[in-house]
Image (cartoon, rainbow, N blue to C red; front, side, top):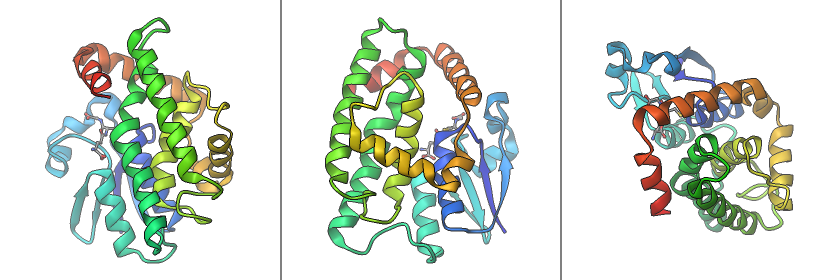
Length: 226
Ligand SMILES: N[C@@H](CCC(=O)N[C@@H](CS)C(=O)NCC(=O)O)C(=O)O
């Protein structure tokens, strides 16, 4: 059976977790306790030398990198497709996925670690505004990025936007985005995988600790490039 190495509070693990459940692929989950540094143990490093979750092992094939895993699952398990066939719908799904991955994901860190008066926090929030405007335009009158059906674009972007809405960022000024988040959260799979407020508070503390440990430089660089 497919093995899924994950941590429930890892947003990038949740991308894969949601896809596995939405596609109803049978899998065995294996918790990697990244809060206790389990990802640095030799057994796990043999699976992913870059010490990140998620990882899957399927039919003897090891796959790392959440986006590569999502493509693999989509290509191998054809039932309940999460990518549209139509070229323009596919372009929208991929744009949502890539903008979320390349522009939005890193902004979750300043939201969790910076104080209210921090210029970095202000900059991150302004960029999140731009991204949510773009997502609202991309969704237009559709329920999801790819039309009427859930897609990988919704899984990758939705996972980040729902998390942001639970942090210090009010999405209510974006009516379309709020409706789309509500639609996602009506799905059973999203309710199963969504961390509760207490878990989000723990995640926030962990991120703050990591930021202190690694220093601010990496975050500053990422937000400055934005
Ligand atoms: N590019 C990777 C990044 C994965 C990643 O950064 N995972 C985090 C959790 S969200 C992690 O494992 N952190 C622990 C560590 O890096 O030591 C992917 O998309 O899968």
